Image (cartoon, rainbow, N blue to C red; front, top):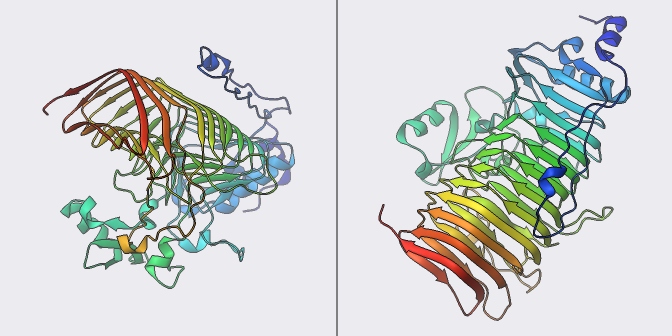
Length: 472
């Protein structure tokens, strides 16, 4: 049904173009061990438009992609504001945010991404992956707020390793259709019983096309508050080459065995604040990455990051740097966080071809319990192994370039109850990869090894660190 223009105008102009309220985050930047450039407040015009004005129906059946995108585009044309997603289950394909748009989800709103993979095909000939569920490119002032849920329906995309699921779970995956590989040790969501077509010639090729739940590139002023991001096809929250990012009080969750299910990844970002958030994910928890320098931007490397008062349950690492840190990391503070049940606590990982330099990294006030492997680990021979790969598929780099250099890292006031190894570190023989690492005033209880430090390749300085063996 065509909505009369006068009704759309009234829906879009519920208030005038005054700027909306924004929270003052300056209090987080007190008593820092290094000067971190603070985030600037982010606000939006006080206009509100509901997606229902463009015909969206929250019945979980009606595809609402066009209605949601039309609401975003119409409001952006007026200068921006809040796109309201009310209570309901809103089935959608990929959507794109625009300047000055805040996607606002009511508490009982679920934005649910369609299992129809054809909806996500990127027509660009350069695209190697499908469109992100929510994306933005070269935008200023974008946000997602409220207390609803954004569900990426990732089981329709992710491969599953047999060894990571129970018999019951494995049977449930097979009930969906799909195909098994490697003698039944790997399942792909291929030829599914849902009837939606596949979009690649093989399940392995389709797996490489999956994309992130929220991925923005070359953006400034990004605000994420309150909402839950869950079940991404790949990574969940993933800003790239972006500046002035506030992530406050979000929840990120997916099954613990979700392949590549990273929670919060800041890739080549400057000026970011991550606070009061909760993670329970299938791969890295809160992670900093840096790839090769991009042309046309001054936002390369990771700089001026404050991460505070967050909780990480399952993840491969509670706080992680790497595996790519090519353009470097500097002025990063992580404090007052808790990790419970992560595979590792503080994880620093890279490799030749992926490495860069760190400086002014300060981590303090971290409490951990039930860490599966190491409380703190530095590794410089990390190899990325996608689902289905074998050790023989990982080739050594041809050149000694982009060498990792973890240095000027200060870790203090750490309490860990239960890990296999307290502190592990190894560099690369003949290269100065791990040095000037200071760990102090900490207590770590372990079950297997106090330390596993290769003194020939890693310089780790311990001061007032208690390492106590316990039996669990």
